Image (cartoon, rainbow, N blue to C red; front, side, top):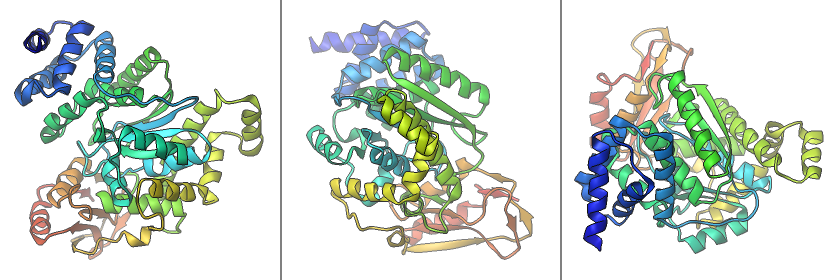
Length: 425
């Protein structure tokens, strides 16, 4: 019986490699074998490569998402279940740690399944792990969400869309995912987590995952198609992105920056705050559209819209208080602050050898250098951007600061920065 299932998966992979369409049963066979780790790395790579080269039809994308969900565990929550997701590719833009407590504080359920780093120096799960545990059982997740309305956990910590995590490991060394794979990976986990109100952050730019506006619009349409199939209310926000929203790259530095926004520190990243409030506000608008009339009227009267409501939750300190509750529920230290997250190991300041103005920031090179420094495994490793786009640089000033947990990685990064320049000025 097991041999027959394996053969069915092999036949489907052969079929896809020559560009033919797959049925639901064929796609299910592949996902089933991958999730049980019966296919092996080579054959899984063939399937991942075929999807990158040939792409999928919308119907195949639906089948693939459904099969990923059906071959793993599912969570069930009642009522409005909110979620947000960025398609990634932009280092140092850690909005989830700000958005989740805002939505949870507003009274909506937001069980956030996050990924570890795939194409960036740190994923949301890597960052949250600086503050608390991110690996929990299904029963433990229910308890955390019941207590706080939200959670920020690693989606691979229990058997949810298991085929996706196997495929992520296959693709990780190449630092790319196909657009269809990005779409399926995100939506499978949203469906499995019971999400029914979703905001997607879709950045595009020359050095991030999606390069052109045209491609972003194609991806947006596919997200909307899939959401409709699974009865999910969705809003896809496309925006040009030429630099990270924050200045910190790597688990410690990104988490510190998110906490500074929640704490409303004077020196917080305003760009990161604006991006997070835009996402939170749009998600609150979506949730409100299905909320009782009296709540809708109260919010419109008090705050005008979701962004106004989100801003109030952040500025009054209620979001930070909620984040402390979530950290505690996830077995972390609720009293941790941004001041506690200062990398104390090895560092190196990159000094400007001329005057100028920052014209370009290369996210791909940031990612390469941050990984050389040891991120995300080394939590304190990363890069702090002392200068960003359109900012003046005077000869002798610090352009950026490199951090690592060991001298070897730091030396490697210092030797490599000439080949992978971060800033052009």
